[in-house]
Image 1 (cartoon, rainbow, N blue to C red):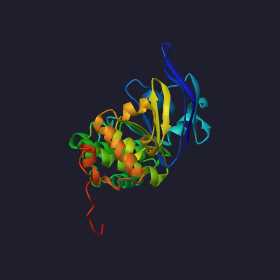
Image 2: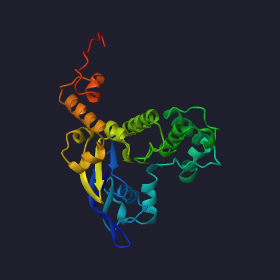
Image 3: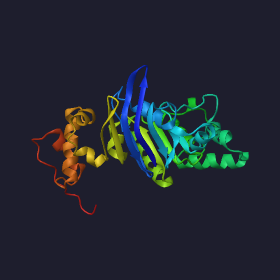
Image 4: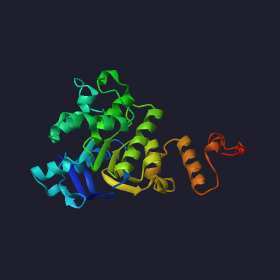
Length: 282
């Protein structure tokens, strides 16, 4: 679990984060969302220690990370995995060498043990046998999965993902979301995701923190977001008429008034009667 308490951060006298608090639990995907300039990236960097907060505390499993020095912080960072927006793979290293990099940095394991671990995580992200390929030979989705494999190779307690679906097509984005969700549950990690992807919000958002002008504007789950009356949140999430109709559909589904997504014609043409479900034995 990660606790953020009353974080404040300024740059050159300008307040970027103002009194933000949150509790991000293990075994769930904790999403930070907001428009550009909302402070979500600065907040994530404060949490991982790339920025020092002006005020407030960040606690990892009850340990005050903001008060730690040198070696203490290093020990916490060994328990952190990072999936960067652009994957951040080393172009001059092949897949195997990229994933093995943290193992070589933080462990004294023999080569065979490290290689076995590399193969384990490659299999976990459904990329067995690509060890000798270089990043230039991989698709965008494959690069993300290799980067995710590297992020979990040290069995971290905490996983941070910065725009994991950036630059990916919708179908590949769903694959990455599913992997992140599965790995979070499988290893009971505290996963923190910065994202603009509303599919991610609605599919894996166990806890969602919406930032607006440096402040926590709203927090809740993907289910609660559907019924939220917060105008700023609704304008951000459901900006278009199509997405607003999608929200209305999901609200009806959650309340049991529409059984499933086969009534999508309602969303496209409100004057069209709903499709009858004539399927049998499904």
